Image (cartoon, rainbow over all chains, first blue to last red; front, side, top):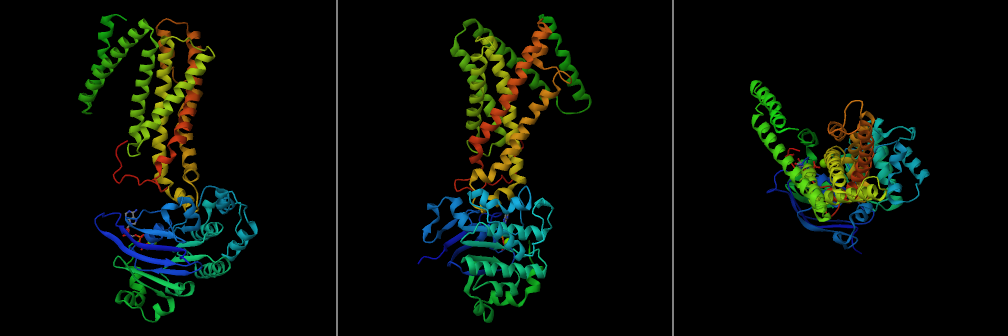
Length: 250
Length: 256
Ligand SMILES: Nc1ncnc2c1ncn2[C@@H]1O[C@H](COP(=O)(O)OP(=O)(O)O)[C@@H](O)[C@H]1O
Ligand SMILES: [Mg+2]
């Protein structure tokens, strides 16, 4: 069977310097229900790669396939309904928390599953949140989790999570990890996480993709990756978490 | 107005130029160009109208209306040069607004079907619609800077182009209509509109002039609504690429 998402020799030029490649010749695939952690230093193009997979960013070369069908034969909105990107900086839409949570069902004319929404919010430790509250008034962490639940309720086949716990305290972070692990199990949703948190990447992924030097340098089993990465870059990357985060350009 | 009186109006140009030189505003060249252009353009249109009123041939009326629409569309389209095909959409919008408005005005016999009525009223309708279209485009550009996140969020949730841009469109339509509607609230108290003033100066009864001005105010409100809504409907897709991503805003924003 064809993988859920396959990327075939994807290349992308730098948005600022069009003559240089941000990355090139990236080939990777992810199966239904599979969980991937995408690692790499800041600025290597991890967000760009996920945005490409969600058709939010154009590619300069290569092909994308969803369940074996080429991207050009999809209406973009159908593709994005199946492969949904959750941005690192959450954007709350105008209106209340409830209106935000209802977005997917409003867009697609489907029934709003309120019990499911309540359960997800509770699992994300937002059970106490008043749904009538204007979403703009939420704290950063509350916004990030509300945006995540908003995307879950779309029930995509694959979720692209861009540092989705970056503004959460350790407790809520763990709650979100559990919620997403349970969700993936129940719904068979594939997930690709960008994270700078090695602990997290271990607990939420079956596979690691490691980006560096404009390439997808490593692609393999999570355990094997942490036991012994095959490239020098990856070895240095997992050894020096402090330096890596301090040297970020984001 | 006598020729001598007409020439004497140059005293106002002299005042403007004097102030510019005195205060080193550096506007003398623009003042000169503006003076010459407004004199030439107005004289030109005066003779054209004189000719059209004489011949009464409907072909000339249509030609004049079409060139008004063309110039207005070109002008308003400069607000969003980077959006391909915007001028054509504005031209279509202005033509529809003008066509519908005229059809109603003539159909209900509100104005007489003579060039003396059709051309000036059309000029007012097209000119004001041009301004509405310009404000709409400016506002959309601002929206798509400020609300990029909103649009992308909706796209990422599987929304269509129309669904994703709906909020930005609605806010821009509102902003483009507000000046016209505010104008309705203060007209006569704050400003005396040009057309009414002109009629009174030319000797018409002020009450008669006011009746026409009321007509114009209501026509302008409806043409503002028609223009903004029509333009938003036929142009929203232009803000997206073929594969429904927002078009990149130009790196160096051109002066608008
Ligand atoms: N809109 C943009 N304009 C200019 N440069 C950009 C833009 N988006 C991303 N970049 C650049 O592209 C590179 C990759 O960015 P990104 O994909 O966000 O990296 P990562 O998520 O791995 O940190 C960075 O160097 C960033 O500065
Ligand atoms: Mg990033």
